[in-house]
Length: 127
Image (cartoon, rainbow, N blue to C red; front, side, top):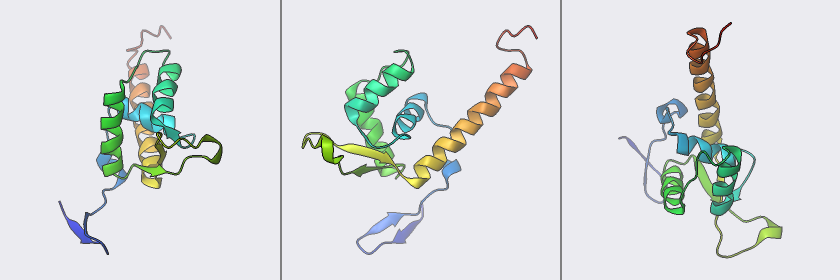
């Protein structure tokens, strides 16, 4: 890995968005949850369970391990809580610009994959 000098310390050179692909289903769901705006951990878990009709249910430990990795990769950032939701126990997370780019690229990648599956009639289409 290459490093660049930051004012405070050595920082790994940032990767291009494509270097993060493909995403695991759990990571994609976390990033999708944050695509509407900042959320705290429990809200991310609830959003994912609701959007997937409970097909995907993240435990707190799985979520916070993934959040730590996403923070290290700078795909998300910890942000201040909204004024109307100040609770010192909650940490809020939001997508960074590269995080948004990664979500868009992964979504396009999955759209292409789905198109290929449809073309091969792998979904059981009778068209």
